[in-house]
Image (cartoon, rainbow, N blue to C red; front, side):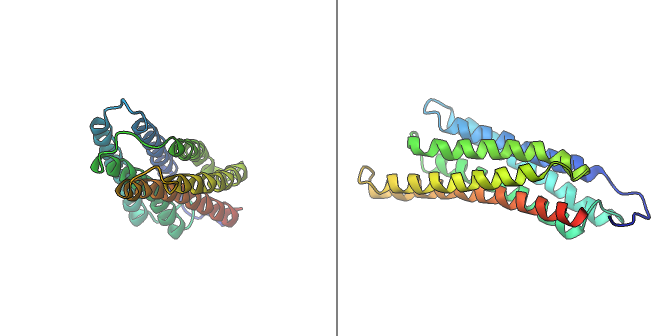
Length: 205
């Protein structure tokens, strides 16, 4: 363990938990977009607000890093973790925005498993953030996120295959491919969060 010669700023832990809670909310809104009867315009507005709130949390973390002498772990790791969490939200907001812009009222059923993986992974991430205080019990988190990412990859390939089975028009395929790609990017970004947490835990152990 590193020798601590000055008090450590602990507000970072609460901010990372706050950032992860935004992801849970964003994944919930994304899931609502799959409902054919949902008010997609209203959900898109809620997502924009959620993404703005997430950005504000990220900015708070960065400002605190820049004004803090002793951080709970390496500054570069704090920046990396904050950026990775923000990336997840950006990809989810992008997905919701494109659904609205492309005027997609009905999405293929094959997309649902990817969104379910996203919901599960965001909740696991939110549950894991308090563990940064002690760096204990986090291994199960990053192992499970890796498993979910692999599962998400399989769902992604199935979704893409379904788009090219001849049942969709060319323009529709292009639109839906953008959506499924953004979902995949969001899941990948969650794995980046878990990988960063793992690196931090190893350094601090």
